[in-house]
Image (cartoon, rainbow, N blue to C red; front, side, top):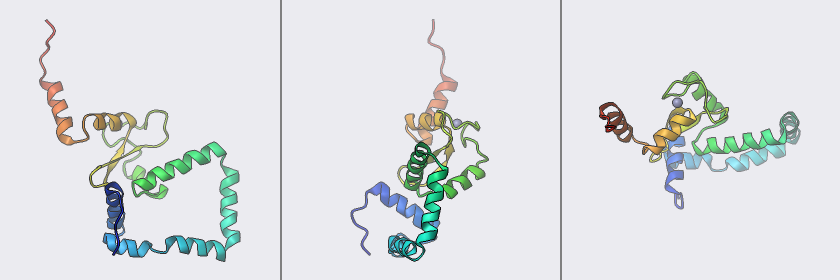
Length: 160
Ligand SMILES: [Zn+2]
């Protein structure tokens, strides 16, 4: 099986997607082979159905919103998530930050940050913007955040 020329992060994402589908990475590569051809065949076989769905999407959302949604779908795909998969996560986390529990994603965004392990690509949870940036800035590890916790609870005041 040819699995060359994959960036390590991309390969990690592929592995997560394969595991979710209950397949090995090699099995998934085989299973996905021809997916683009099948989509093309669907369009050729049912041009009216496909075009009607596109028309519906085009005329019911404005251009700016379409761009935002398309970018967001692209970001989600990077985590191996579809919009449906993301919404299932939101449901599972009761539409709250998995760290601080706020119901506001923050930074004026309608979406939660998809927190993931950068080494394995595995999704850890949905976070608000503040928690996501905070954890990331501290080094993205439980040890680093624990050090900050120890510092804040044990630190004596140096103010004379
Ligand atoms: Zn939070």
